[in-house]
Length: 318
Image (tube, rainbow, N blue to C red; front, side):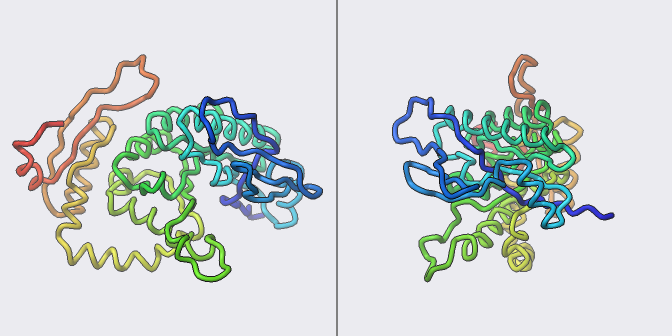
C-alpha cells in the first residue's frame, strides 16, 4: 500500500499562554470560544480566523486524515503565528510554545505525524539556536518559514547563516507565503491566498536563486508551498536574464559570506566557478567561535568575484 503524505497542514493550539512580556499593544494571539468544535483566533482583540478542533486535537485530526485517505502529515504552525514582527523575547516565547505543542502532537501519534516547527527568523542567531533545539531535542523533521521576514526576502544574505545551519542539520524547510506583496491591489472579493500567494511564493523561490543561496547550499532540503506559486512561469525569464545580462552572473559571486568547514568552502568555490564561468576569490575572515558559544558555527568565509575583489582592494577588509 502506498503512503499518502501531506506536507502542507497547519496547527493552531487550543489555547495560548497569557502575554507575559513587557511590551505595550503587542499583537499577542488568544483563543475565544466559537461554535461547537471551533474556536476564534483573536489578535489585538480582533477576529483573525475561526478554526476547527482538528487544528489541535490529535484524535479529530486522525479522523479527518482517514476521511481524506492521508497516511501521514507534516504539521506546521499557522503562518500568522510565526511572530517575526513581535519583539524578539516575545517571539522566542511564542515560538517555543508552538514548537512544544507540535512535539506533543507528534508524541501522541508518532506514526502519523512529523513536525515542522518555527524559528524567530528576525534574529539569525536566535533562529539557529531554536532550529538546533527543534532538530536535536524535539526530534522534528525541520522548520516552516515565511516567504519573507518583515519585507526582506529569504534569499537575502543576512539569512544565509540560518540556511547553512539547516543544511548542516539536514533540516527540511517548508516555505509558506505570509502577508504577501500586492494585497492593496486586489480588486473584487477575492482573498489574498488566491491572488497574492502565488506571486509571493515565487518571489521567495527566485530570491534563493538570484541571491545565490541555493547554489552555495545545494544540499538544502527545501519546498515551497502552493506548488511553488508562479515560479514555473518566472523561471524561463530568469534563465533569459542570466544569458542576456552579464551583471546577473557577477552578482552571484559578489560579496557573500558563509559559515562552513574549509572542505565545504572549497567545494562551493568550485561549483560557483563552473556556474558563472569566471574566477572568484575565497578568503577566511573569522575562525569558529569558542566551544562555549551557544551557537554552533564553522569558520566564516568570504566569497567574491575576482573583478569585484580587484575593485575592492582599497576598501575595508572583512
